[in-house]
Amino acid sequence: MVIRTLFSLLLFIIASPAFALTQVQATVDRNPVAEGEYFVLDIVADDDLNAGALDTSVLLDDFIVGRTSVGRSTKMINFDTTRETRWQVLLSPKSTGTVIIPAFNINNVSSTPIALKVLPSGASADELDNVFIKVETNATEAYVGQLITYKVKLYLAVELQRGVLSAPAVEGAQIKQIGEDKDGSEILDGRRFRVIERTYGIIADLPGELVINGASFSGDVLVEAPRRGGMFGFNESRPMQTEAEREVIQINSTPASYQGKWLVSDIAMLKETWPDDVSEFEVGSPITRTISLIASNTDDTSLPDIDIPLAEGLKAYPEKPVRQTFVRDNQVVSQYSLTTAIVPTKPGTYTLPEIRVPWWNPHLKKQQYATLPERTIEVIGSSAATTDIPAADSFSPASNQEYWPLIAAVFALLWLITLVLWRRAVAASYSYNPQHDIHSKADAPRKTATTGLNAIMHACDKNDSSAAITAVQAYFSERLGQPMTLSQISALSTPLAQAIHKLQADKYSRQPQAMDKKSLMDAILAYKEQPQAYKKPLIADLNP
Image (cartoon, rainbow, N blue to C red):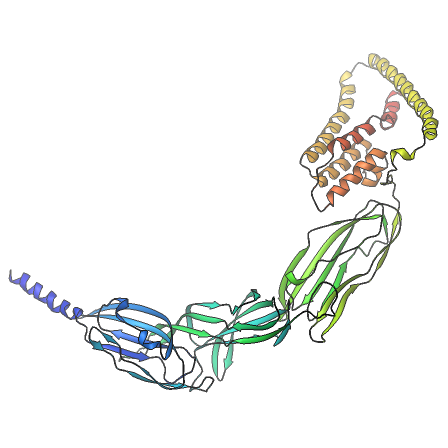
């Protein structure tokens, strides 16, 4: 019973001081400070209190009040328990001179007022700030649509625990980050700073004054805590907030003398990729041409589309343009690339006209042009049939009547030859007993042909023109016993030439189109019925 009483008394002695607020202390992390500069006000109460126990509204008259953080801690040393509530408030003075931070009253316990000395903005202090921002723009005057690079450098002389670097606030303009952040270091006045660099691109939409409210940083850093006795010091987390100065840039409207699609850049040029190792091109063979527009200090969305006119006899199948923006040698570079397949449909000499892209030079304040000179190409006819098939009514009735008897006589002669060869083959089959050899020789090409036709039809069903072209080449190469190009296959018959041309047009078309499976298969099967492909093998087998 005595032990229980003593134990209860001991608990009462240990716990009783924790419920009494006896002291409120207010301190600042530095004094003096500069006007507009953020500093930290620490308010510590020796009790466990609610966050709302501190009223900071008395600071609004003389300070800009930033983020407020609250922390609590409990310590027990030799059965001596202490509790603490700490408020950290970010403040920025509104005026210079001596500003009084008033006393704070919490549960009838007050802190001591602080006389804060505020220096003019930009005045030199005993040492540089631990955290500050510098910004740099590439122009004090720009045009509508011109890219303004806004480079932000965050300087840290202390260890960063966490934080957010916010973009500048701009009205009437587009803004986006360009490239990735860079992390490096610089030495200023003998102090080494960690420097985080970020670049933004700003494009004004309207003429007039463009106001850029500076980028800002808000976060926590680790600073060395003051020693309160003992040999060792410790780091503690401190909230930090800083903001860059406001920038004003004059935006000019588009000059009235400018003609063409508006593009403003430090420099712009056109480049071309062309098959230089080829001097002549065949009808039906695609020519790949890539044109690139490259501009400095310009966003890729500002680059205009390129119009490429072509002469009659050339067909163009452009791919989707590619736009990109990147940073090279501290310069923002944008590129627009357009790849086009040019397919000649007639032989002859063609001139690809000059390409001119207008752009405005903001330094010289005049219009200039990025140009590609005209190019002349020679197109020769191929072994394939011409792709320009004349209309049906272009043949006169007299010419049709002259050709029909000759065509009928040729087909009759071919039918008689086929009949004679068939009779001889039947007679030979009765005199030659090992029939499995005959079947194996006859079935092999049939199986090969069936496999090739299935591949072609499968590609058509998938609407894959590239696979269909490959399957057609493989089929005829197998059937004719030699490698066959598209030009050689087109030379076999007029329907095949038309079908091959349609496949090439589908392959290089900008918009996907449904393949004409029926016309392609009809053209292939029509050629298959011609006996010339089997004439030589049949005669070779039947000769004694």
